[in-house]
Image 1 (tube, helix red, strand yellow):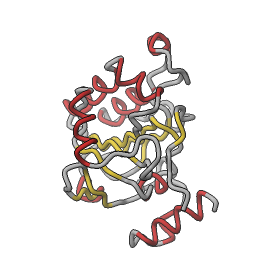
Image 2 (cartoon, one colour):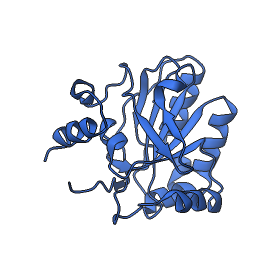
Image 3 (cartoon, rainbow, N blue to C red):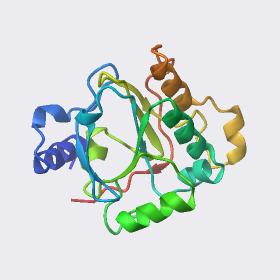
Image 4 (cartoon, rainbow, N blue to C red):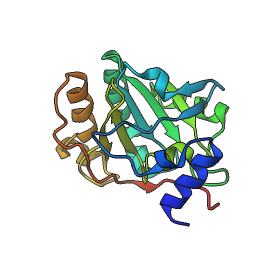
Length: 204
């Protein structure tokens, strides 16, 4: 099944109209979704209109994610974004039985153990949100403007590496995008190539 067909099938199961399931486009409205977080709370993207929103795909077994968290860089990005009023949603799209799959208690444990600071951790075991955004890797970042427009989609930075030392010389794409959107400025690199582990979607 193609990624497009998978998005359509998953979206229809979630009650989303098929026309909304094309690959997301920067400069267009961000795909709307409803998700459940690690504490059982429902999160509607549409309810967050008026705020800048960041989506961060994660997988606690991925060494690329490990680089970002072991270095403290992702936590710093989350902290700095939230201080600017940004809503940070970490998304786990790993399917049951796949690397990175977590239930609510495990997701909360991971958040505490790595001192992460998302507003919510969205559990997406059927990959509905991931497919809506055509998320390919962990980590991968989307930045949504307060008006609901998708402003950035791609990698956390410019160097595809698991080496913490590479971060100092990488262009910080995600940070630049967040800061530009908060300041009402154009994003210099609105679409970049994401890198990391493949999102561990289910096979069905």
